[in-house]
Amino acid sequence: MTGIYIHIPFCASRCIYCAFYSTTSLDLRQRYVDAVCRDMTMSREIVRDIATIYIGGGTPSQLTIDQLHQIFDTIYNNKVYSITANPEVTIEVNPDDVSVDFATALQQLPVNRVSMGAQTFNDERLHFLRRRHTSAQVTEAVKRLRTAGIRNISIDLMYGFPGETTSDWAHDIDAALALNVEHLSAYCLTIEEGTPLHRMMKGHDVDEETERTMYYMLKDRLEAAGFEHYEISNFARPGFRSRHNGSYWSGIPYLGLGAAAHSFDGHTRSWNVADIHQYIEGIEQGKRHFESEAIEGDTRYNDILTTALRTREGLDLNRLSAYHRDYCLRSARQFIDDGLLKNTDGHLALTRRALFVSDMVISGLMLVDD
Image 1 (cartoon, one colour):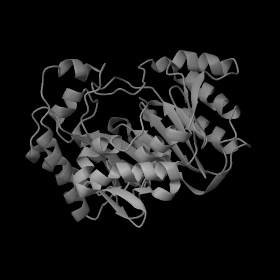
Image 2 (tube, one colour; image 1 turned 135 degrees about the vertical axis):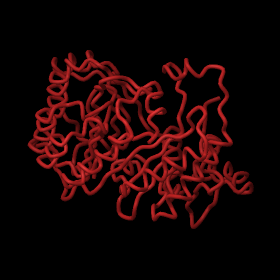
Image 3 (spheres, helix red, strand yellow; image 1 turned 90 degrees about the vertical axis):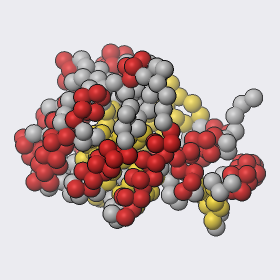
Protein backbone atom coordinates (compact mmCIF):
# COMPACT_ATOMS: atom_id res chain seq x y z
CA MET A 1 0.00 0.00 0.00
CA THR A 2 1.15 3.54 -0.75
CA GLY A 3 -0.22 7.04 -0.43
CA ILE A 4 -0.23 10.21 -2.51
CA TYR A 5 0.18 13.67 -1.02
CA ILE A 6 -0.46 16.70 -3.23
CA HIS A 7 0.66 20.07 -1.92
CA ILE A 8 -1.53 23.00 -2.92
CA PRO A 9 0.46 26.05 -1.78
CA PHE A 10 -2.13 28.74 -2.51
CA CYS A 11 -3.55 30.91 0.26
CA ALA A 12 -5.74 33.99 -0.02
CA SER A 13 -3.67 35.45 2.82
CA ARG A 14 -0.93 34.20 5.13
CA CYS A 15 -1.50 33.38 8.80
CA ILE A 16 1.08 34.86 11.14
CA TYR A 17 2.22 31.50 12.56
CA CYS A 18 2.60 29.48 9.37
CA ALA A 19 6.04 28.24 8.32
CA PHE A 20 4.81 25.92 5.54
CA TYR A 21 5.60 26.82 1.97
CA SER A 22 2.74 28.87 0.52
CA THR A 23 2.02 31.67 -1.92
CA THR A 24 -0.74 34.22 -2.46
CA SER A 25 -0.13 34.25 -6.25
CA LEU A 26 -3.55 32.84 -7.10
CA ASP A 27 -3.10 33.66 -10.80
CA LEU A 28 -0.74 30.66 -11.01
CA ARG A 29 -3.36 28.12 -9.96
CA GLN A 30 -4.22 26.64 -13.36
CA ARG A 31 -0.61 26.48 -14.51
CA TYR A 32 0.31 24.81 -11.22
CA VAL A 33 -2.50 22.24 -11.46
CA ASP A 34 -1.40 21.46 -15.02
CA ALA A 35 2.15 20.90 -13.75
CA VAL A 36 1.01 18.64 -10.89
CA CYS A 37 -1.04 16.54 -13.31
CA ARG A 38 1.90 16.27 -15.69
CA ASP A 39 4.10 15.31 -12.72
CA MET A 40 1.79 12.35 -12.16
CA THR A 41 2.61 11.07 -15.64
CA MET A 42 6.29 11.18 -14.64
CA SER A 43 5.50 8.96 -11.64
CA ARG A 44 8.10 6.85 -9.95
CA GLU A 45 7.96 3.13 -9.11
CA ILE A 46 6.74 4.05 -5.64
CA VAL A 47 3.16 4.47 -6.86
CA ARG A 48 1.39 1.13 -6.52
CA ASP A 49 -1.80 0.12 -4.72
CA ILE A 50 -2.76 3.60 -3.56
CA ALA A 51 -4.73 3.38 -0.32
CA THR A 52 -4.76 7.07 0.68
CA ILE A 53 -4.85 10.38 -1.16
CA TYR A 54 -4.32 13.62 0.71
CA ILE A 55 -4.76 17.10 -0.82
CA GLY A 56 -3.06 19.48 1.60
CA GLY A 57 -1.60 22.95 1.71
CA GLY A 58 -1.71 25.83 1.80
CA THR A 59 -5.41 25.98 1.12
CA PRO A 60 -6.66 23.37 -1.36
CA SER A 61 -10.16 24.84 -1.13
CA GLN A 62 -8.76 27.87 -2.98
CA LEU A 63 -8.75 25.74 -6.13
CA THR A 64 -11.81 25.76 -8.37
CA ILE A 65 -13.99 22.68 -8.55
CA ASP A 66 -12.89 22.19 -12.16
CA GLN A 67 -9.26 22.18 -11.04
CA LEU A 68 -10.01 19.60 -8.34
CA HIS A 69 -11.79 17.48 -10.94
CA GLN A 70 -8.70 17.73 -13.14
CA ILE A 71 -6.46 16.46 -10.33
CA PHE A 72 -8.68 13.53 -9.42
CA ASP A 73 -9.36 12.61 -13.04
CA THR A 74 -5.61 12.43 -13.61
CA ILE A 75 -5.09 10.26 -10.53
CA TYR A 76 -7.85 7.82 -11.38
CA ASN A 77 -7.15 7.70 -15.12
CA ASN A 78 -3.38 7.29 -14.84
CA LYS A 79 -2.68 3.73 -15.99
CA VAL A 80 0.44 3.56 -13.80
CA TYR A 81 -1.62 4.05 -10.64
CA SER A 82 -3.71 1.38 -8.97
CA ILE A 83 -6.31 2.61 -6.47
CA THR A 84 -7.32 0.12 -3.78
CA ALA A 85 -10.91 -0.49 -2.78
CA ASN A 86 -12.27 2.09 -0.32
CA PRO A 87 -9.31 4.50 -0.32
CA GLU A 88 -9.21 7.31 2.22
CA VAL A 89 -9.37 10.57 0.24
CA THR A 90 -8.81 13.75 2.27
CA ILE A 91 -8.93 17.40 1.32
CA GLU A 92 -7.98 20.29 3.61
CA VAL A 93 -10.36 23.26 3.60
CA ASN A 94 -10.78 26.66 5.19
CA PRO A 95 -14.22 27.10 6.80
CA ASP A 96 -15.03 30.26 4.80
CA ASP A 97 -14.41 28.42 1.52
CA VAL A 98 -17.10 25.83 2.28
CA SER A 99 -19.99 27.45 0.49
CA VAL A 100 -23.13 25.49 -0.32
CA ASP A 101 -21.88 25.14 -3.90
CA PHE A 102 -18.43 23.94 -2.80
CA ALA A 103 -19.84 21.37 -0.37
CA THR A 104 -22.32 20.11 -2.97
CA ALA A 105 -19.56 19.86 -5.58
CA LEU A 106 -17.57 17.56 -3.29
CA GLN A 107 -20.26 14.93 -3.90
CA GLN A 108 -18.98 14.66 -7.48
CA LEU A 109 -15.41 14.00 -6.29
CA PRO A 110 -13.98 10.87 -4.61
CA VAL A 111 -13.37 12.89 -1.40
CA ASN A 112 -14.62 11.05 1.70
CA ARG A 113 -12.72 12.91 4.41
CA VAL A 114 -12.38 16.65 5.08
CA SER A 115 -9.82 18.28 7.34
CA MET A 116 -10.72 21.82 8.37
CA GLY A 117 -8.60 24.43 10.11
CA ALA A 118 -10.83 25.79 12.85
CA GLN A 119 -7.91 26.75 15.18
CA THR A 120 -10.13 28.44 17.78
CA PHE A 121 -13.74 29.43 18.36
CA ASN A 122 -12.75 32.86 19.70
CA ASP A 123 -13.09 35.51 17.00
CA GLU A 124 -10.54 37.82 18.60
CA ARG A 125 -7.90 35.09 18.52
CA LEU A 126 -8.84 34.24 14.93
CA HIS A 127 -8.24 37.89 14.04
CA PHE A 128 -4.91 37.78 15.89
CA LEU A 129 -3.86 34.79 13.74
CA ARG A 130 -5.00 36.63 10.58
CA ARG A 131 -7.43 33.82 9.84
CA ARG A 132 -10.12 34.71 7.30
CA HIS A 133 -13.01 32.86 8.91
CA THR A 134 -15.17 33.40 11.97
CA SER A 135 -16.14 30.83 14.60
CA ALA A 136 -19.70 30.78 13.27
CA GLN A 137 -18.42 29.80 9.83
CA VAL A 138 -16.82 26.65 11.29
CA THR A 139 -20.18 25.44 12.55
CA GLU A 140 -21.88 26.34 9.28
CA ALA A 141 -19.17 24.57 7.25
CA VAL A 142 -19.61 21.34 9.24
CA LYS A 143 -23.38 21.46 8.64
CA ARG A 144 -22.87 21.95 4.90
CA LEU A 145 -20.37 19.10 4.70
CA ARG A 146 -22.78 16.79 6.52
CA THR A 147 -25.56 17.74 4.12
CA ALA A 148 -23.17 16.91 1.27
CA GLY A 149 -22.66 13.43 2.70
CA ILE A 150 -19.22 13.80 4.28
CA ARG A 151 -19.17 11.39 7.22
CA ASN A 152 -15.52 11.82 8.21
CA ILE A 153 -14.62 15.33 9.33
CA SER A 154 -11.48 16.41 11.17
CA ILE A 155 -10.86 19.83 12.67
CA ASP A 156 -7.63 21.44 13.81
CA LEU A 157 -7.39 23.40 17.05
CA MET A 158 -4.62 25.51 18.57
CA TYR A 159 -3.89 26.37 22.17
CA GLY A 160 -1.25 28.39 24.01
CA PHE A 161 -2.22 31.80 22.64
CA PRO A 162 -0.78 34.87 24.41
CA GLY A 163 -3.05 35.60 27.35
CA GLU A 164 -5.21 32.49 26.82
CA THR A 165 -6.58 30.96 30.02
CA THR A 166 -7.57 27.38 30.77
CA SER A 167 -11.20 28.58 30.80
CA ASP A 168 -10.76 29.95 27.28
CA TRP A 169 -9.36 26.60 26.17
CA ALA A 170 -12.19 24.69 27.85
CA HIS A 171 -14.64 26.77 25.79
CA ASP A 172 -12.84 25.80 22.56
CA ILE A 173 -12.92 22.12 23.53
CA ASP A 174 -16.64 22.32 24.32
CA ALA A 175 -17.32 24.04 20.98
CA ALA A 176 -15.36 21.36 19.11
CA LEU A 177 -17.17 18.51 20.87
CA ALA A 178 -20.52 20.12 20.07
CA LEU A 179 -19.77 19.68 16.36
CA ASN A 180 -19.68 15.86 16.74
CA VAL A 181 -16.77 15.49 14.32
CA GLU A 182 -14.92 12.18 13.94
CA HIS A 183 -11.36 13.44 14.34
CA LEU A 184 -9.54 16.28 16.04
CA SER A 185 -5.94 17.47 15.86
CA ALA A 186 -4.62 19.96 18.39
CA TYR A 187 -1.33 21.82 18.35
CA CYS A 188 0.32 24.21 20.75
CA LEU A 189 0.87 27.55 19.02
CA THR A 190 4.48 27.30 17.92
CA ILE A 191 6.57 30.39 17.32
CA GLU A 192 8.54 29.48 14.19
CA GLU A 193 11.56 31.58 13.35
CA GLY A 194 11.01 33.80 10.32
CA THR A 195 7.24 34.07 10.74
CA PRO A 196 5.41 37.32 11.60
CA LEU A 197 4.44 35.73 14.92
CA HIS A 198 8.12 35.23 15.76
CA ARG A 199 8.78 38.93 15.24
CA MET A 200 5.70 39.90 17.25
CA MET A 201 6.52 37.66 20.20
CA LYS A 202 10.19 38.53 20.71
CA GLY A 203 10.81 39.13 24.38
CA HIS A 204 7.58 37.41 25.49
CA ASP A 205 7.94 34.37 27.72
CA VAL A 206 5.91 31.23 27.04
CA ASP A 207 3.91 29.91 30.00
CA GLU A 208 4.79 26.23 29.61
CA GLU A 209 2.96 25.16 32.75
CA THR A 210 -0.32 26.57 31.44
CA GLU A 211 0.30 24.90 28.08
CA ARG A 212 0.93 21.59 29.87
CA THR A 213 -2.35 21.96 31.78
CA MET A 214 -4.19 22.70 28.52
CA TYR A 215 -2.72 19.65 26.81
CA TYR A 216 -3.79 17.22 29.52
CA MET A 217 -7.17 18.94 29.82
CA LEU A 218 -7.70 18.25 26.11
CA LYS A 219 -6.60 14.64 26.45
CA ASP A 220 -8.86 13.93 29.41
CA ARG A 221 -11.91 15.71 27.98
CA LEU A 222 -11.70 14.04 24.58
CA GLU A 223 -11.07 10.57 25.99
CA ALA A 224 -14.07 11.01 28.29
CA ALA A 225 -16.10 11.89 25.17
CA GLY A 226 -15.09 8.62 23.47
CA PHE A 227 -12.10 9.74 21.44
CA GLU A 228 -8.96 7.63 21.17
CA HIS A 229 -5.70 9.49 21.75
CA TYR A 230 -3.74 7.60 19.11
CA GLU A 231 -0.90 10.04 18.39
CA ILE A 232 0.62 12.90 20.35
CA SER A 233 -1.51 15.58 18.64
CA ASN A 234 -4.34 13.48 17.20
CA PHE A 235 -7.62 12.11 18.54
CA ALA A 236 -10.18 9.98 16.72
CA ARG A 237 -13.46 8.26 17.34
CA PRO A 238 -13.13 4.47 16.95
CA GLY A 239 -12.48 3.59 13.32
CA PHE A 240 -11.64 7.14 12.25
CA ARG A 241 -7.88 7.41 12.66
CA SER A 242 -6.15 9.25 9.82
CA ARG A 243 -4.96 6.41 7.62
CA HIS A 244 -2.80 8.73 5.52
CA ASN A 245 -0.91 10.24 8.44
CA GLY A 246 -0.65 6.78 9.93
CA SER A 247 1.36 5.72 6.89
CA TYR A 248 3.96 8.38 7.71
CA TRP A 249 4.30 7.11 11.27
CA SER A 250 4.53 3.49 10.10
CA GLY A 251 7.16 3.99 7.42
CA ILE A 252 4.82 3.19 4.52
CA PRO A 253 5.98 4.63 1.15
CA TYR A 254 4.24 7.71 -0.25
CA LEU A 255 4.53 9.99 -3.25
CA GLY A 256 4.58 13.76 -2.81
CA LEU A 257 3.49 15.96 -5.71
CA GLY A 258 3.83 19.72 -5.94
CA ALA A 259 6.22 22.38 -4.71
CA ALA A 260 7.93 21.46 -1.41
CA ALA A 261 6.22 18.05 -1.28
CA HIS A 262 8.15 15.09 0.16
CA SER A 263 8.26 11.47 -1.04
CA PHE A 264 9.53 8.26 0.54
CA ASP A 265 10.01 4.95 -1.28
CA GLY A 266 11.09 2.90 1.71
CA HIS A 267 14.79 3.57 1.16
CA THR A 268 15.11 7.17 -0.04
CA ARG A 269 13.46 10.41 0.99
CA SER A 270 13.15 13.19 -1.57
CA TRP A 271 11.67 16.67 -1.54
CA ASN A 272 10.64 18.94 -4.37
CA VAL A 273 11.97 22.47 -4.69
CA ALA A 274 10.11 24.89 -2.40
CA ASP A 275 9.54 27.42 -5.14
CA ILE A 276 6.38 27.38 -7.24
CA HIS A 277 8.04 28.97 -10.27
CA GLN A 278 10.96 26.50 -10.31
CA TYR A 279 8.58 23.60 -9.76
CA ILE A 280 6.26 24.59 -12.62
CA GLU A 281 9.04 25.45 -15.06
CA GLY A 282 10.88 22.20 -14.31
CA ILE A 283 7.82 20.03 -14.90
CA GLU A 284 6.97 21.95 -18.08
CA GLN A 285 10.46 21.06 -19.31
CA GLY A 286 9.96 17.42 -18.40
CA LYS A 287 12.22 17.31 -15.34
CA ARG A 288 11.74 17.51 -11.59
CA HIS A 289 13.79 19.80 -9.37
CA PHE A 290 14.32 17.90 -6.12
CA GLU A 291 16.86 16.74 -3.57
CA SER A 292 17.09 13.36 -1.89
CA GLU A 293 18.87 11.39 0.79
CA ALA A 294 19.25 7.68 1.51
CA ILE A 295 17.46 6.52 4.65
CA GLU A 296 19.73 3.86 6.11
CA GLY A 297 21.82 3.10 9.18
CA ASP A 298 21.56 5.72 11.91
CA THR A 299 19.33 7.95 9.79
CA ARG A 300 16.80 5.15 9.41
CA TYR A 301 16.96 4.45 13.15
CA ASN A 302 16.28 8.11 13.97
CA ASP A 303 13.42 8.24 11.47
CA ILE A 304 11.72 5.15 12.89
CA LEU A 305 12.22 6.44 16.41
CA THR A 306 10.79 9.92 15.84
CA THR A 307 7.69 8.66 14.02
CA ALA A 308 6.80 5.47 15.88
CA LEU A 309 7.17 6.95 19.35
CA ARG A 310 4.58 9.59 18.49
CA THR A 311 1.92 6.88 18.35
CA ARG A 312 -0.08 5.18 21.07
CA GLU A 313 1.35 1.79 20.08
CA GLY A 314 4.91 3.08 20.26
CA LEU A 315 8.02 1.57 18.72
CA ASP A 316 8.12 -2.12 17.87
CA LEU A 317 11.74 -2.89 18.77
CA ASN A 318 11.78 -5.69 16.20
CA ARG A 319 11.84 -3.01 13.49
CA LEU A 320 15.37 -2.13 14.58
CA SER A 321 18.66 -3.82 13.81
CA ALA A 322 20.31 -5.65 16.71
CA TYR A 323 22.81 -2.80 17.13
CA HIS A 324 20.16 -0.07 17.16
CA ARG A 325 17.82 -2.08 19.38
CA ASP A 326 20.59 -2.48 21.94
CA TYR A 327 21.47 1.22 21.75
CA CYS A 328 17.81 2.23 22.10
CA LEU A 329 17.23 0.06 25.15
CA ARG A 330 20.37 1.29 26.87
CA SER A 331 19.40 4.91 26.17
CA ALA A 332 15.83 4.28 27.33
CA ARG A 333 16.82 2.84 30.70
CA GLN A 334 16.89 6.17 32.55
CA PHE A 335 13.64 7.33 30.95
CA ILE A 336 11.98 4.07 32.01
CA ASP A 337 13.28 4.51 35.55
CA ASP A 338 11.93 8.09 35.53
CA GLY A 339 8.50 6.92 34.42
CA LEU A 340 8.64 8.59 30.98
CA LEU A 341 8.89 5.41 28.88
CA LYS A 342 7.46 1.92 29.22
CA ASN A 343 8.54 -1.32 27.54
CA THR A 344 5.59 -3.65 27.06
CA ASP A 345 6.09 -6.89 25.15
CA GLY A 346 8.84 -5.41 23.01
CA HIS A 347 7.03 -2.14 22.32
CA LEU A 348 8.62 1.02 23.68
CA ALA A 349 6.06 3.77 24.27
CA LEU A 350 5.74 7.14 25.94
CA THR A 351 3.89 7.24 29.25
CA ARG A 352 1.22 9.83 29.96
CA ARG A 353 3.79 11.99 31.79
CA ALA A 354 6.05 12.01 28.75
CA LEU A 355 3.52 13.13 26.14
CA PHE A 356 4.00 16.85 26.69
CA VAL A 357 7.81 16.52 26.76
CA SER A 358 8.01 13.95 23.98
CA ASP A 359 10.61 15.89 21.98
CA MET A 360 13.01 15.79 24.93
CA VAL A 361 12.52 12.06 25.45
CA ILE A 362 12.82 11.15 21.75
CA SER A 363 15.91 13.30 21.24
CA GLY A 364 17.48 11.49 24.19
CA LEU A 365 17.21 8.22 22.29
CA MET A 366 18.51 9.47 18.96
CA LEU A 367 21.93 8.88 17.49
CA VAL A 368 23.65 12.12 16.56
CA ASP A 369 26.91 12.81 14.79
CA ASP A 370 29.71 14.06 17.00
